[in-house]
Image (cartoon, rainbow, N blue to C red; front, top):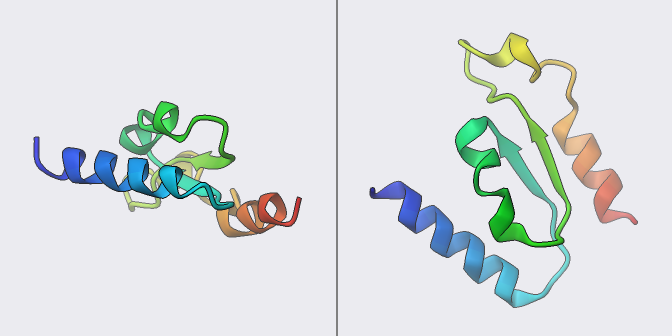
Length: 72
């Protein structure tokens, strides 16, 4: 366990700031971290890697969806 712990601590620090944000969670590993975000909005889709991009990433418009959530 290396990057996982760093990622979890980074998420906790961002959430603790209490400022508006939208998380973009690509892939199963990222989606598994969703509970750390509490009630903050998140956009979820398949990972954009060549092996899985055609399983839900293409056409998911993650940045447009994040912008929409930020404007609410």
